Image (cartoon, rainbow, N blue to C red):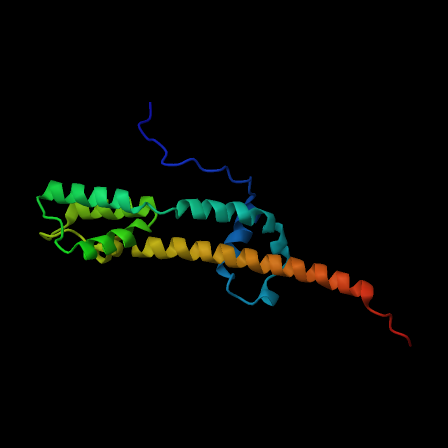
Amino acid sequence: MSAIVPLRRMAALPAVSDRQRNLLAWALSQAEEPLVHLPEELEEIAPLLPSFIEQERANAAPIGAAEVLKCLQAFADRRGLPMPENSFALDFDVELMGEWPRDLFRQAIKMAWMDWPYRRLPDAQALRSYIRQDLNERTGKLKRLELLAKKLEFRRKLAERTEEMRRFSRPVIR
């Protein structure tokens, strides 16, 4: 029997072929390129993008200030550290860390729990140093997915409008 409890329920992703997975990976690496440079075959993954975006947003769901404060209090209690006197600084740190994804915050606090060398509570900057690369990759991936979805939607609308306008164009008389 497993002792692992899922933190939240995730919607099942649609079945994705290896070709679509490779196409998506390539498209994400090219998402910031101008639309004219993106090939037409990306239309194959356009219907999949909303579910991938939804999953990335779920993965980026913030932990919340209450849980951050609870973890910092446990950290301070365990190490015999006083909570910071300046409540504004603590509030600001808690607010910043509360915006991080739950799994990344827990990863950072675990790493600090194992080897924090100072006689003070870790602040947001110190904990962020443990997860900076993962946090940047995750937010970057979400931004690229959203950008790609917007570009493909724009291309679809442009094609529709072009076809619509062709009906009204006059034939060329020679």
